[in-house]
Image (cartoon, rainbow, N blue to C red; front, side, top):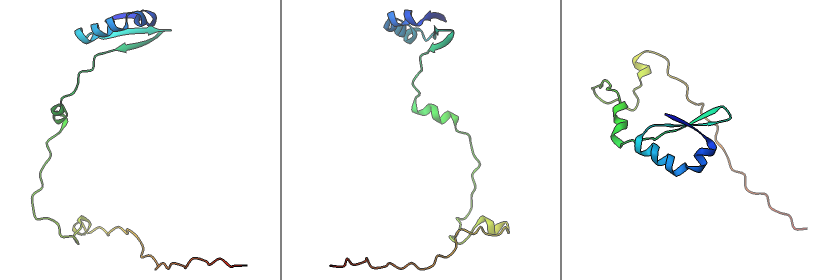
Length: 99
């Protein structure tokens, strides 16, 4: 891995970028003591994301009825979702007085 200055990079940007693309060797760029790295990022194939998946256990059985809940199975109290709201009424718009 070679190190170059930002000025040198500016002068030879396309040549150095092609070199990184062709060889795959990263290029270090130094500016005021801070190092930057120009690297080739290989494109991910759509299948490469599947490698990260882990096998999971499969639960087999009858589907739950809409009124069933795992909380009922474990005898835990059901969570209170919301209170019943009072009925709302709509007021008619106020009329403008002619004056």
